[in-house]
Image 1: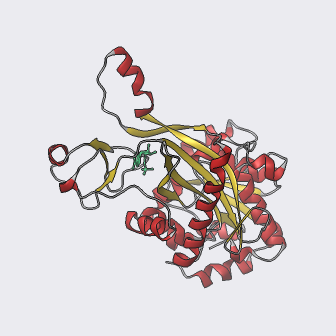
Image 2: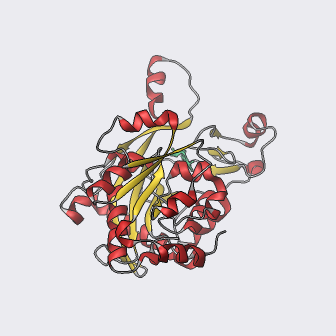
Image 3: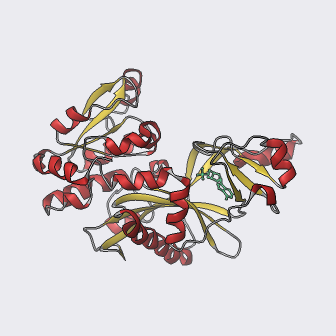
Length: 350
Ligand code: AMP
C-alpha cells in the first residue's frame, strides 16, 4: 500500500488551479466526464484504442483528452500526475486493477483503503456488522435449512450465483466448493440500492461523522434472468434463476423509509472512519427490504456505482439539495472544487 504521506506530497506539488479528473473509459465514465464538464474541470479518459470511437460518439460526455492504454491494468500514473490529475475509481477500475489499485502512484478520489474493504468478503461483513446494519445470515453449507444464495469467490456482477434449498442439493451442485464460497440466506423482498455521497467538508446534508451525507439517488438492478423469469413461467418454460447484471432502473422510495436510509448511510460512514480512516465521496449500500419494512444490507460499494448512470441530470432527491442537475459524477467534480478552494484536498483524496 502506497503510504498516505507520499500521495499527500504529490498532491501538495499539484497546481490547484489546473486540477483534472481522470478515469477509465468504462462503467460510469460518461457521467463523470459530463459532470466534470458542467463544473468546468478538465478530464482525461484512459481508453483502449478500440473504445475511443464509442466515447467520441458522445460529444458532451467524452473526455477533454485521451491517454490511450494497452489494457485496463496498465495505467500511466506518472503522466497523470504530471497533468495534475486525480483518478476517480469506479467498478471497472476496482475490478481490473485488483489489489494493485492500492499501490498506484497517483492521487485517487476518496480513500483507497475503502476499495480493499469492498473487495474482501470478510472485511465487508466486518464493516456491515460494525456499522450495526441488519445483514442476511451466513449459513454453514452442511446445515442448510432454508433457501440460500451461493456466491462464489471473485464472481462479478452476480455472475454464476446459484440458489440451493438443502445441503443435499448444495453437495450435488457444488461438489468441490472453492475456498471463499459464501452461502447466504436468500432474502425475499424488494431490492434497493441507495447512492450516497459523504462529504467531510460540507454540513449541508444529513449530519454524519465530521461532515454530512447526501442521498443522490436510488436504483435497482436488472438481472438476467431472474428479473424476467415470470415470462418463462407464464409460457411454461422451466428456467433456473441467475443474477447477471444487465442494467439498472430508478426507484423512488416510500418517504417514510428514507430516514432509515439516511441512518444506514451515517452508520456506514462512521464505521468506515473507525475501521479504515473513512469513506469520503460516493458509496452505495446494496439492500433488500422485506414485507415488514426491515432493511437488510448485503454489500457496500465504496465508490460510484453504475446505478447512478440513470441520473446524469440529477434525481428526485438531488433536486431537493441542489435545485440544478446534480449527478453523482458532477458531485465528485464539485467536491474537488470545494476542497481545493478551502485547502482541504487531503480530506477527500488518497
Ligand atoms: P452481489 O454480488 O452481492 O451484489 O449480488 C448480486 C445480486 O444477487 C443482487 O443484486 C441480488 O439480486 C442477488 N442477491 C445477493 N445477495 C442476496 C441475498 N442474500 N438474497 C437475495 N438475493 C441476493
